[in-house]
Image (cartoon, rainbow, N blue to C red; front, top):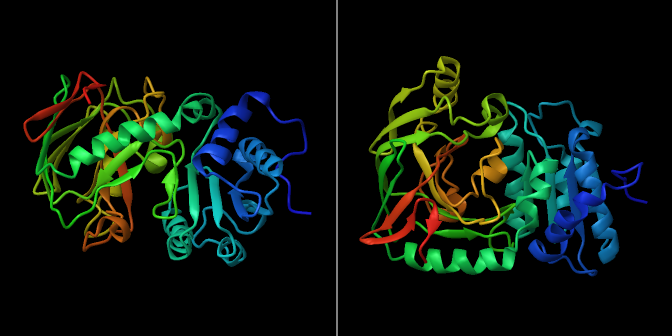
Length: 339
């Protein structure tokens, strides 16, 4: 028998989101094998996912990270990577710890090499399972497709907010736009909950006010930044200045974006499309899917976008209440899509 994540009854409130993940987003079939990777802190959610997999009837393996290595993980345990390579579908549902990005990149490298349909549920929690994971992902996929069709034709995208963001990004036809709407295919693994389109921009300039959240482990540390935003000056896609009344946030962000030569470079320009996400909850996994713009410094998902550079780090930055223009066409006003 495989390992089990649950020893007690499953929380019924988690089942709709888990069923959405397994049946709609990953479209798991009884003939396919799935690997579930979780940790002690996320066992309850993993249990709901596991029971939905069992209803489908698919063979599976489940791994609790702490049973195989000491946290924080410097490397993803080989037993997990070897098992992952045997599966057609996978889920990572666990909490982040500082310094673990490299281990997750090892995991997604296997996913990419074997073209596995992978649901990435980093820092998933109960609130997200009850909100973003209950979205109508087929509807979000249709919206994302309309938007990406326009984005692929745009040479320049400008975004503004009433809080001070005024950022312009330029794009190259050599750099691919990708859709991670929640409907996951072999072409590109995706975060769950899904709902975004993104690329690596050719060049970026302006001011971006982070009054939503920042990513990775800093998200848990600082939460919703509405009352203490971080203002980032960007020049030629590099951080040219950082300002915040919260000096700890400013200094932690500066340290994070100084780890390697490209940690301070804009690697991702993205637009959230999950219309079930109505408000900032203080968790990057869901908050970056809120309709609007988020950018990330560091790793540009070069294996998918075609960017010719890499970084060991990747940190997302989310704002609020966007107006967005694709060239001369306005596609969002006050956080509402016009397409």
